Length: 376
Image 1 (cartoon, rainbow, N blue to C red):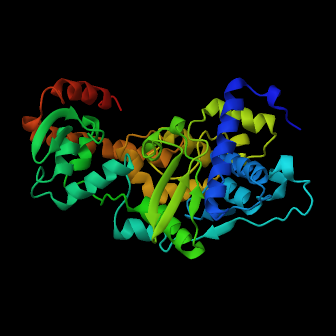
Image 2 (spheres, one colour; image 1 turned 180 degrees about the vertical axis):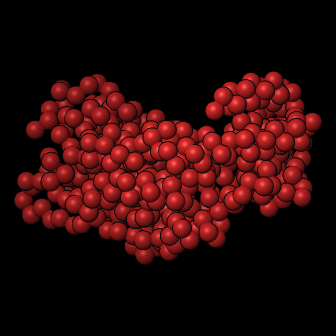
Image 3 (cartoon, rainbow, N blue to C red; image 1 turned 90 degrees about the horizontal axis):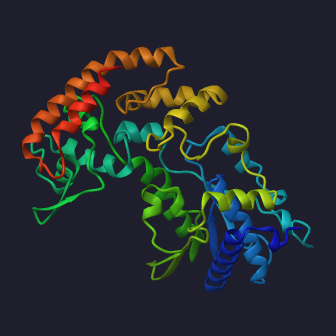
């Protein structure tokens, strides 16, 4: 039994807020919601909170379906956790009479990752930059002909064709200008997130006729997804009725999540407790800030996943300057490609620097980066 006075003031307040939000949204939808359950730390905490909120709402345990989208790119440890997720995880309420267990529902995307990258291209750097680079690759003959290309290459905001003198969030760092080169050698696309996650989520809502979804988004995590949401609830019209996207722990800090796991003795995936991951998701995704550290952990603990990551994404990791020093074959390929990358990058900077607003981009910065890269 956990008593509220055992919790920090911050967690106490955050717990009350989260339970209020869960109760409110369950009552709004008469419980016709589902939890987007990734098997990661945040969705596991949210699963626990939903059970507590459901009891407080008078609906009893497991009123909310738990649905996991199996992208095929989960860590083995996450997949095992999802497969065995059950009533033992709901510690405070597992002894409630007539407790009924429902396994996590699994949703499969309609395309596999290897099909997506073959048909559309590979992700690089971030979802937004992948989208803008994909547009650029379609318009090599008119490299500054679209607003997306101007935002990406010039780094400056444009509206109705006019520069605004402000930097964009999708400005491509000059150390990454080789991605603009026509001889890069592969297609770039942001389609994998949409096809593996967004579209299956839309199918889940349609097939289950749900009125809402709980997601474990937190602004403290950063990234484009957390910036997409400004409050704990988003209400949109879908299929002629209101649909609720509820984010009960949107304002929780990392410290609050860790304290909740500790105080409630919550069991989480071995990805965190044994392997040492700080974040989990698609194991080969090049978007994360910790991709180099994550690849090393995968190499040491999940060799089959590491082999798959290198099979599909080695060229991307090399072009993003990720140093896998533990992998001799990778480092040989890395050293062989570096001169070409530096050459392509210089060509692109020379080509576009004539159009730079000096208040937005300064060539001197690139020159220092060139010296730094030539050390490898």
